[in-house]
Length: 210
Image 1 (tube, rainbow, N blue to C red):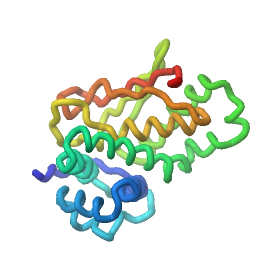
Image 2 (image 1 turned 90 degrees about the horizontal axis):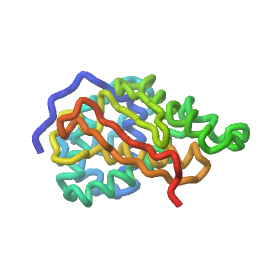
Image 3 (image 1 turned 180 degrees about the horizontal axis):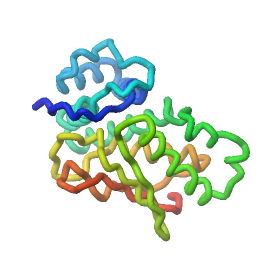
Image 4 (image 1 turned 135 degrees about the horizontal axis):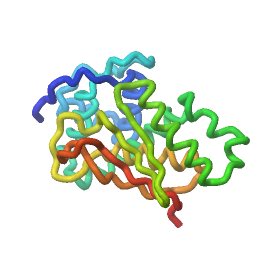
């Protein structure tokens, strides 16, 4: 796999560590090691980023992991694994971040569903905007939300034929399940920087599935 030039944009070590731990849960240790080798990230073998919020994990490294996953399993196989890893990333750690910690409180749980989404989706975006160089914004429309990632660590430096930020889609799906108290929602990536768009954009339907 061609190395992606360093971006000078960073994720906090902690979020990168959570994502790698989630990927190991989905694929097993040997699977994770194979991905890290293919992504030219041998320095991470048995050596996860430290459990702190220092911005030290380059977007190029983060993107290389998901590019390697797709290269190893093909777009379809890689997509399923990335969705699962994204969901596991949220479930294993991101829901404990400050902006979302209150979503488990009783006062939040009794809010109407649409109020939970109105509060919870921007809270998810805030986590990334405040802790990393991933600037995210949310816009509410009549029947959906538009979740926009202006600088995307998932596809940084990659060029694909179709939108490829499945780990972000999975993370949003699991985040929505958490803030809504157990509902599943449709999340589709409608724009992707890797395809040549200016931003990565995700359409979140307001009505839950089923």
